[in-house]
Image 1 (cartoon, rainbow, N blue to C red):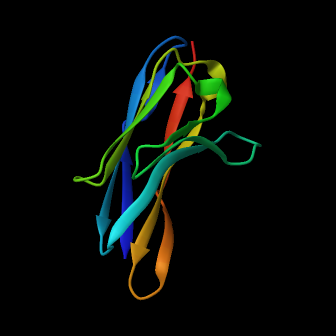
Image 2: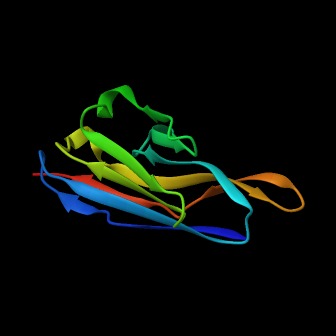
Image 3: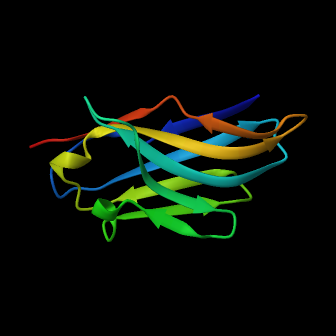
Length: 120
């Protein structure tokens, strides 16, 4: 069983910063990529940022230059530094990881979600 635990959400004013952290634990052989998705009320879940085990990074266009994803492969953690937050960034943020497990192989895992609210 693989588990992702997120931390760091909360309420922040527009222009402020937050840092989200996610730690993976459990029985897995490796993690291919880790990332962050978000889901705003009434909208579909969308990719915010993702980082592979080769340090290839993808960002949603609207967060480029404001958000930075980083990963500690040895600790199985991924962080998302969010700066210059905007009202539109308000959402539940989900950590995601593609793990390699036995005997089935690839297992996609999700965290429980953490709320980020940007409001004045």
